[in-house]
Image (cartoon, rainbow, N blue to C red):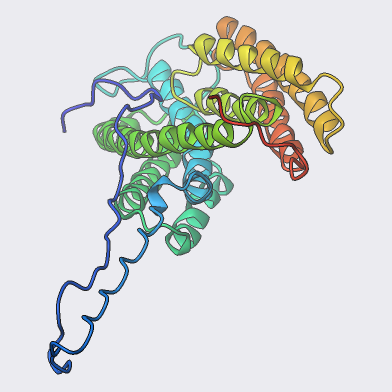
Length: 326
């Protein structure tokens, strides 16, 4: 199977949309009484208002994509790390490398596959239906489990220095990784395209209602934080400097907007944001020195999760709307 040109996380500029339909009664229905000259013509029914497009509802889309993002973000680092460590130990022809250093590849933990199982089970019941995403997620889960099964055998063979077993597994493992890599790219692009559009829509709605004040900056901060966490879970996670710069800019803008705002949850979000940005810098520096770094990355993910929880405590219900510009 031909390899894709890239398996890093990237944002697509494509956006999906469905057009709403107007239901309108145009003309007489069979069985209606005829209109005589002495009668006033019946007024046509008013056109029904266009239905809201669920594919442009940022809250629905973000909620729908959440389980699938958790699936890919949890499993991808394990698969990528295993294959990287495997190729550090095994030649292209399946022979063991002499004098190989570094950690041996470890089998993927079964718990790492749980988020994908949950996404497939629960995601299809969330609105709106996204058949392409759901199909891509099912394919990704299949290819991840296929690779995980072979990875476990390969890890055992390497630990035992069983050259024959490694040689017999090699081609199947490489092919399984290629299939996983393609599935990873397809799902990543599908998620990124929809999430990017949802984020733009969410910011536009807040700006129209309340301007680029604290609520806007808080949402922008969460979006930038998610972008960095997403990069941190990518295969090429050592190249997250752009995502970090975006996060730092959003954090600065949020801090300037927050000031002494007396809105419930602002202090908690400010504290969580500072912790996360600090951890994000540390993770970026650590990965630049050692791609196998784990402690700093784990701290960054923990900081991100706390920031997301803190953002849920914000209450802008009493915020004064901003009058539109003349």
